[in-house]
Image: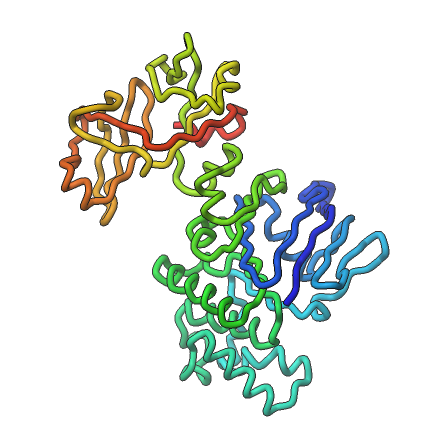
Length: 367
């Protein structure tokens, strides 16, 4: 069991600052996910913990031991940190069988042969590959190869597993299956897991805590999955975790209006009244936070698109000149008679709204 602590860690590559004075901690035994866009520095964090990169400044502590402190000339080699690492490309040896791949780290540690066999079999069983011990990687599916990589990371009895986008190259069904496997492995081993990904669904499914990383290499929020989803602290975190509608609004004569054409909209919450002084601000909501009907209360709207996506109906709705997405469970949509054709009128009621400052940084999220 081991905590991981970053203290004011900075890292640059070829003069470009990737991390600056980054501080955070990962609790022993938790699954901690760093979620962020490509190029934000999340893999750099993992590589610094693993010992594949050396920080420019700051400290990295694993358990009670400082493993990196450049001011003191200290940086422990990866093999001295006793970590298990799994990358997105599996990195299994094509000429070795499942058992040989899993046993290899124990051979490097000069573990006696009988112990190697026992421990490798235990790791193979743990990832549900029993019976595949003598198969080569080209005889396995992508998901099975990823299980081999997990077993190889587990076999050394490491307290910490570092997983760098390990499911990216799998199809949708295998990704779903493997994320449950990873969570089960954590329960069985009580390992500390650092999971790095840009996949929001995986992050929500497996994480005890999620750290949302911005393009500038900072964490804008660290909390449990429910909190970061339901109570985002800023616009970036809101739009990155889940499908998000972000509508630019303005305040006119104490009334909240859509900025595009002045159409009246949901009234700004009192808690966020300070935003009214800004020329524009952002109203954010999820597609499932809108209730549609043919008649009754609500804002007048027009259906631009209605698409059946299995158990979900996905709509594009327009109020005034502003369009946004709405979703409903197919069963509810049929029962409530809201399977529309393009051009039909409807009513829209907003169940929940988030309000953010308009920093004009993420224009692509605005409809």
